[in-house]
Length: 217
Picture (cartoon, rainbow, N blue to C red):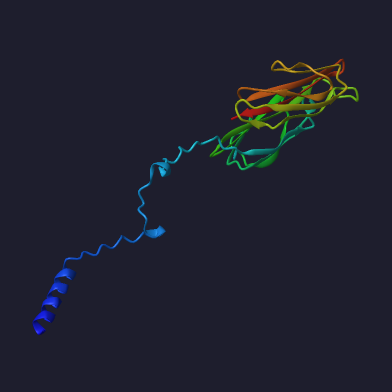
């Protein structure tokens, strides 16, 4: 009997030794999943950075001459206020100057002053014109009350609006192919490069001139 029991134990041990237990691999957790992308998850290269022109340019808050019409020998005051610029110069007559200030001027003839303001983003230009007459202005002398460009800095292909207000003029015109205009109004311009426009107002009592500049960047 003992031999039979021993024989059965040996048979069971041999049978167990022949069994191969196969354990399925554990599913990886999301954090353990392979990082190799599939076809639908292909990583594209980052797009190239496109640099557009910065408009963090200097700003000319004030650039005018008062009065804008004088008799030869008299004085007017040229005033300027430049923001965000570290180089400022005015032609004719001034080299590097401080960003804000004023200066008496008495040119012998009608003069357009050109201010150039520069920072590390570039330069912009502003202009103003002093009309010098041969006789003192009267109540009937033509007067330019305002002449502006909005905006005065545009991107290439953009546009600006010239606006003006005058009195006592029998003829009013703007150069650069704008032509004859009414005494008060506005018009769109599309300069392809930085352009200075001159407004001219005349009558039998005299003439007055004024300029604005549209910067194209």
